[in-house]
Image (cartoon, rainbow, N blue to C red):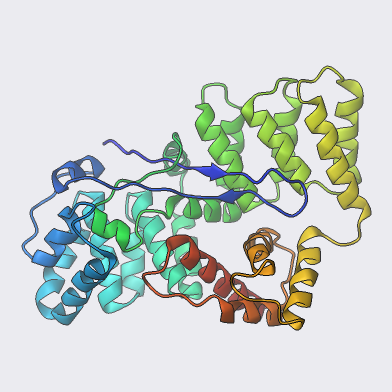
Length: 386
């Protein structure tokens, strides 16, 4: 089975308020016949709508037309459901993904459907259904589904998941109509959630980051996803990478930069100070000094960067400066990412609701915009649940 995926990681090079952001670009141009690469033989569908969802190429279908195909299947559920169920049992991962997606769109989520997805052999299928729940604001079900996925993890399934991060940018090839419907971009987000919740996955990632035979691109992707997940062991993992050599490899450079983004407290200051003092010939000596300055400033400042940013956004909201295209609104993405990443931080609920009112969205909105709105909704739900 050939799986072609890539992960493109955009990095904002600033030590103060800009965490790593993960940007995903996907290109899906495959004809129906080439979908056999994704897990098995693909039987020719009888329903015209399903056949078109699986075969139309870019330029042959618009967003409105792709949505209309799903609406048509919803309008004829009694006749379409048997073929949709057959898709979920296919040996082809693309067909199974479409089948489960259509079941959820037509019937809504249910324990039985989500259990079947959690048991599916393809991480892609699990990732896209997790995305569906997240975008629909079904956060309790999303949380429960992720826990099911994590409960089924083994060393072999974790390693198989990480092997899918061996190229950049992450790309799952899907037919054009499925891509237009927003499918195909969920794998990195699923991986982040697994790293947030599974100590075994973090331990496996840690071993792979230290192993000499693991491809560099996988190591770089794992490190960026660990940055987004921010597990308890994250700082120690960075220290291990930084201390292992004095070279200026891309992986070590990224670890130094991320340490400057996250590090705080006397222990982090001491770690960097020792490196700067004892390794003057280090090829990243300047970057280490910059990281030490950032960590020092964060340690002596009583307020965290995310708290500072929250105060700025609160002031702009009171002054009625907050509009979607305003300067302060451009900081919202940083605030939302930082609030999600800092597990102990409790966002201001009134501010979140103000942001929420500004970010209107619908099913055909840009994917990253829809994810931003879903992230805001998630933070509101999480804060209200405390």
